[in-house]
Each structure stands twice: as structure tokens, then as C-alpha cells.
Image (tube, each protein chain N blue to C red):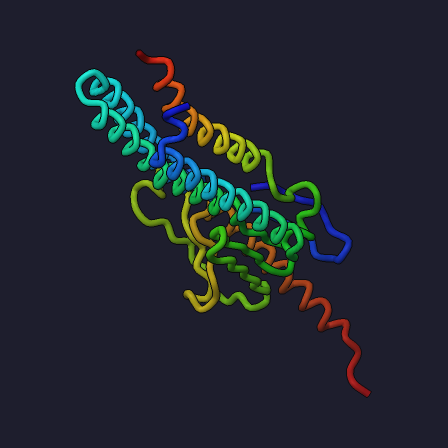
Length: 80
Length: 179
């Protein structure tokens, strides 16, 4: 808990979460833009965004980001 | 590369081209390097914990900062690449190239405007993994860059162009003369 509340860790974690949020929001916007463009309309539902690969990459991104945010405090708490 | 069926507008989708997987190699390498450095910093932090607490925390923060820059940069690159694609129909070539929050470029090249096409593969890596670019009208029109199997795509577009020309010839012979 002490580690979680340290200013350095708080600042870096908040920055990481903001960057992650911005990237995911940008990805969502890009997918929506593609689906409403002539390309997206011609592709139809068969090839609309987000594809399965993009969804998996986004899930992996969230999981890895959460992992590196939670790992240091957990290690700090677990180790003597 | 996917084949698709006809649409209701008379424009038939022929090919959907994504980026070649080799383009993802660089961001994945960047991500792996940043994680390696992070683990190294964490191990260093654990080793320093008994000696100097401030140095231990500094190592952990350094690892965290490395990931903040490079882990997010790698995923930014991956997302930008994966939302860019090229689409070839029986009438035109459509392409979109996006960089999240920074640029959103779309190209639309009607097939009738194409006079020449060149397939360009540069370097040993592009030859080994069979990817490259198609340059249209000697670079006057936007090309299709770093796609898998450019020779096969070129052949497909050429056959479509020949079909367009033969259709145009048939239509012009059947056109009634003006009164």
C-alpha cells in the first residue's frame, strides 16, 4: 500500500493508464471510421473492424499493462 | 489476402490486402526488448533491496519508465498497422493508412487511370518473405506499399484491367451513332 501511494509510482501508473486509454480510444475511433468509409461498406460484415486479431491484441495490451502496473507493488509486498 | 463476393452497388470486391507480418516484427521486437529491460531492472531492484533501499526503488522506477515509453509505443505501432489495409474492387483501388490520433489517409484510385504498374521488392528480406510494393503510373498515383505476394496482386489487377478494356471495347461497338 505504501508503494502504491508513493508519488513516483502514482505518477507513472496514472500516465500509463492515460496512454492506454488514449490508444484504445484511438483504436476504437479508427475502427468506426473504417467501417463507415467506402471500404468498410464494401467489405460488409465479413471484414469489418475490429477483426479478431485486433481484439486479441487489445486484450493482450490491457493485460500486459495491468501486469506491469501491479507487479512492482506485489513484489514489494511479497518480498521481505 | 481474401476473396470476396459481389456487392449490391455493382462494385465487386476482389481482394483485401493487409500489411505483411514482417511489418509487425519491429514493434514486437521493441516490446520484447522493453520487457527484457523491465525484468532486468526488477531483478536489479531485488538485488539492491538489502543494500540500498533508494537505489532499489530507483531501479524499479527506471524499469517502469522504460515500459511506459516503449511498451505503449510498440502497441501504438501495432494498432496503427493493423487498422491500415488496401482493398481492390473491379473498379478501383481503395486504401487506408491510419496512425491513431495523428493521421488518417485514404486513397481511391480508379482502375481506368492506371497506365503502368511496377512491382518493387527491395532487399533480401522482402525477397525471402515475398512482400513488396506496387508502384502505379511511375509514382504519379499513390501506390500499394509493403503487401504480401505483390506479383500475384499485380497479376490480378492486370487481369481486371484487361477485362475492363475488353468490356469498354464491347460497349463502344454497341453504342448507336448520334442522330
